[in-house]
Length: 217
Image 1 (spheres, one colour):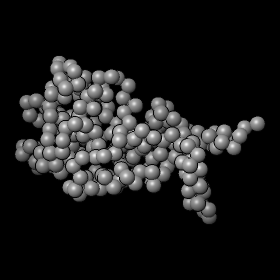
Image 2 (spheres, helix red, strand yellow):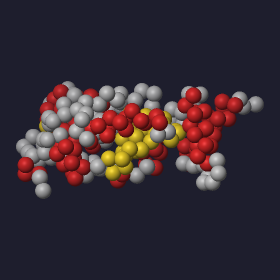
Image 3 (tube, helix red, strand yellow):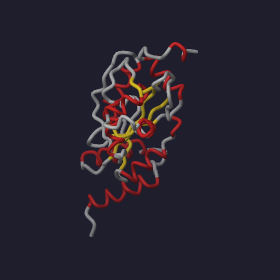
Image 4 (cartoon, rainbow, N blue to C red):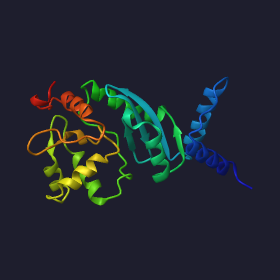
């Protein structure tokens, strides 16, 4: 006979796979809170997620016990990032705004110009290649108000000729802003690429005071 915990795990896994939400009507909100509380206190939720409003739109934030594992811009939608987390981390995913409060506060401070360095720990488990992780680790060290080139980041990650691979790793960055891939630009000038669009990259560089004059509207 399945224990209570086993049944709760099965319910959470089913909810994660099907993206079920509590029905609307009386008791729906309290039911949602109860599920989150049971999952959090019982250690059943491997991933919690919530949302944060920003100048770039509504951001999806997802955390594991290790730290922030996903930050998705509006253009990425919600289902794709959560489906990936379900496949590659755990299907035990629960929505919890409270769990993301710390990250949300830091993002608010960043966009208000009051925060230059995030203290939120990150979880890079979605990046499977060793070189890709090294690239993102080196990118995390680029300070606010500074930029580095793809060549420089590749060299710091141990492959001076690996500019293309470095660019691919940055393009796959699952935690933009906090892992500041927007601070990596082309060697000869120009912004380079940005998975979520150059308008967002310009916005972030302008916020930090390092957008090249030729890129201003």
